[in-house]
Image (tube, rainbow, N blue to C red; front, top):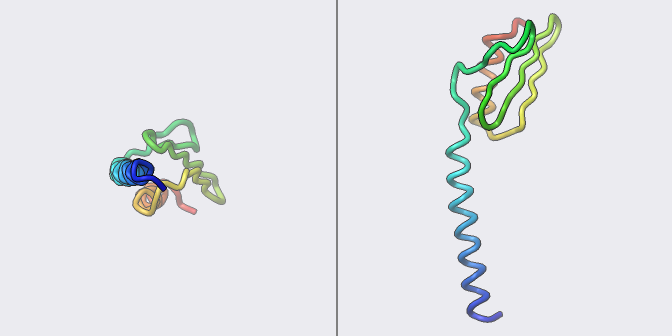
Length: 84
């Protein structure tokens, strides 16, 4: 492998690492942000968008899986909205 290829690969890896670190820090959902969309549907708008459908026997959460911290925030919102 030539030196220029090694330097290019190193720069690419560094760029991806920095971008990933910035992405991980900027995608935290705001607390207490669930908005009622209809009788049984709530949404947390932002990035990512989350949907919460509250039924009489169960609650459905549509989550894009954006990390443990967002999952904790979503779980707290669902606890406030759902009785089941």
